[in-house]
Amino acid sequence: MKVALIAPPYPLEEAPSPPLGICYVAAACEAAGAEVIIIDYIVSRYTPEKLWEQLDEFKPDVVGATSVTLNFFAGAEILKAAKQHCPSVVTVMGGPHVSFDAENTLAQFPEIDAVILGEAENTLMQWLPAAKNRSAWNDIKGLAFFDGENFISTGSGDFIENLDALPQPSRHLLPLSKYKALGFPISIITSRGCPNKCIFCLGRKMVGFKVRYRDPALVVDEIEAVLAMGFERINIADDLFTANKKRVKVLCEEILNRNIQFGWSAFARVDTVDEETLSIMKKAGCDAVSFGIESGNPEMLKRVKKRITLDQARQAVAACKKVGMIAHASFMVGLPGEDHQTMQDSFDFAKELDIEHGYHFLAPFPGTTVRDNLNAYDLEILTDNWTRYDANTPIVKTSHLDPDIMTSFVAGAYNDVFERWEDSKKRYAEGNGTPEENLAVESEQRLKLIFDILSHDLIKDVGNFHSAGQNPAMELSVRIADRIDMDPDFICRYIRLWHEKNYLAYSRDNGMDRWVWAPNQYLN
Image (cartoon, rainbow, N blue to C red):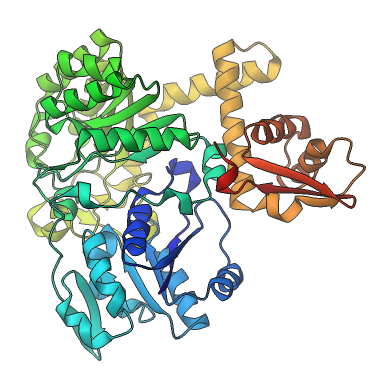
């Protein structure tokens, strides 16, 4: 059995980590005896012709894709293209969006044969041996499909109680050199499950309300393995890392006992941290925590079942400041019943906390309480264009606010930040920037460079050429600059850096210079 797994395009501006979910899926497929590849279109350009070439080379029996709501259409269209090119392959899709919109997905995209509901690993290991035998699918829990014109759902699979029984994610199947050049943290999980009931979140429904924990020793084994790949920073992507303070302490002590030096961050709730917990996290290398505060209005917090108070947020932020840890707060705009005053309350509270913070617009994903029970809330959903479900623009309105008012509020909230940033860029251009400003502006330019290189496959497209061989890095940089209108000297600085770090490989044969992204076996 040969399985090709697709990581569909996802905006690089959204700072994607190397995709963790698909690596768990790949590991489950390998454990079921399949030969597996991951075709990653997050850090490369997608075209149907490129997909068909990759499928012809691998000749898979099954083609699968995973997605969130934002890139659902991209993933579904790729499976459609795969099926049209290779009608005999079995196509399957998983992830939070299709888990809660399976019937619509299968009806809209008949080229998709099946949907995996919820946690995928156990279902996949049972389904893969029967993938070519549709008559057996009815007996496999966690599947949705059409039998003729009849929609069949076998119900969500059981949650995996023993997470330690899962194989380690198959990160070796990713193009790691591209992700390392991209520079975003790599993610791990130490648990699954969320005990909370926020009406805008899928966590509880997707991974269950009971938090299931991994053995801390095995987690730290994985941390060591990830660091050995050459990644320098880790994000713990648990829905709620600090759900159990005693376990957090044990995990941090395991890191300290092994004397592992690395930076990491985690998601937390303001009602689950205290100075003691944050102190040992800081000692173990955690330098930042993110809190989903969502609103500065107490009644709004009750309405969305956030189950926190503003005083708890104040205490959590104070504890972070005391131990020297960066705290970040996320606020949401467009919640049910939102009005001018509730938005102002969030603005005032964010200012009072005096920490890094950001605003996101409510995106009512399929499966969320707010979407499933829309009539119970003062809210109107304006579009089901899933590509707009990125939380960066308003797609709802309330009886008090329309999208223009919400957009204006967020723009105003960021106005000081934008003005300071524009001033920093001006001083940088004039040569008068501070070291911190210069670093920030150059970091933005570096991100633009790597985004353009990856999204347009520029190393592949312009990385082979005849030259005198005297300065191949600059020759490549000039060729890239012709495509993206950027200073060749600036580009060359990073080409050389990525070559020094073994992200880019260079060879010369018979007068031909060849640059490629380094295969994984050549990475640290």
